Image (cartoon, rainbow, N blue to C red; front, side):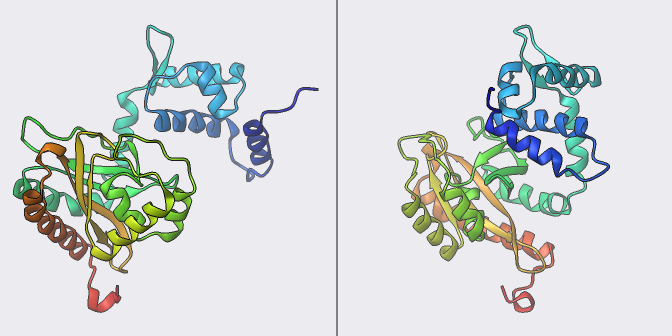
Length: 274
């Protein structure tokens, strides 16, 4: 008798534990959509079946339904990809996030002062970092990023700042395999732990060419009313401009923006004790 693949076994076990009233078909739809979120490219049925553990027969029905609903399209090569309908739905959720609304004027001010692209980032459960919002620099040569895309936390400026304030997440991330994105990418867990600790102690994260060979960043932490770090604000800067003079000029601007957003979220150091 053929063995059931491990991922399918785990999903079968999860189905047995599923609370009463939960629709398995809806869960299957979100499993497919989450693969697109992780992979960030058009995908075929075979890869989707491997990633979700769903049989191809039922997966075809899920994809047909998603295409009919207008949230997924099939291209001329037979691969599937999400449509802008999902982006519009996601924007409705983002519009309800107080953090984005509160931070936006400060992000615009930082962009104007630094003349570089600004990001507002948060951690995601898998250990990555997501840009919730950004304000692009008007410069012709600037960092190219996407709101909503998951980026590696351990080799990005905002990600390291967030890891510095989440020891449990840090240890989970350090235990994962790490790709060598560029010749400068640090992958050694012990050295990364030291770098992240220094980042937290200094309150500023400066990173050069580790996630992308031509990009770097400067970031600082944002706290909520309880003193908890809930986000990071950062500049994305082309590496050829990220010299010592720019760091000396922009690091205080990033710190100030993070402090202003934290204040707008009702963070008061003398009250929270953080």
